[in-house]
Length: 214
Image (cartoon, rainbow, N blue to C red; front, side, top):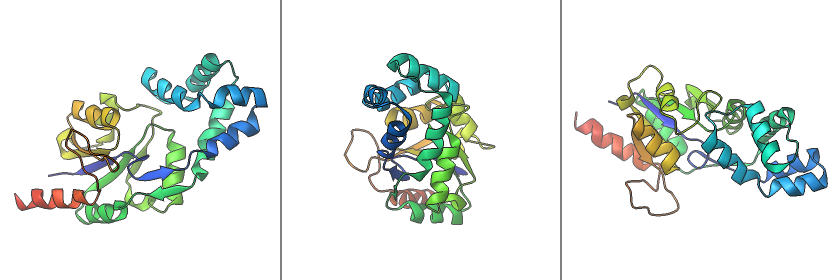
């Protein structure tokens, strides 16, 4: 039986308004540097995640500074990770219902996210969901889709007793499968040609079917 659910955060549990990032960088960079940097910011963040094994302030600072020609200091990276706690959030439909269900079944819930831990802990606390999660795991040690990261997120349990839920097929689903976890691909906005759920409440039905087989 399942012992632990491992959840992605962004796009699965929460949708944050990340336009707030622009305020931070505008306030801390010259107008010229801000213009040069901001249009590349998201793509470079994704490039960093593909190239590096973990989130590290110094490594991220060096990567961004070299690739943009703008001095993005480790201190500014630290400000960014704290600032992003304050983004406006929307909790995805069905999240609370499913978490209540899993907790009542004695199944642990943790979050594993490609972000700095302090950011994600702060965001989860701000929306009042922190009591549902045994642990919130950021990417300071391992970044998805590394096999080691998913095994770490399993805690004391064997991978086959853990389920990864996420909305990114490559990072969340293929990465977890490679580590031997069960997976639920959450694709709320479109149909895809792989097994998936469009509504998180479907997870309750899936588990109830499993319990009936025992």
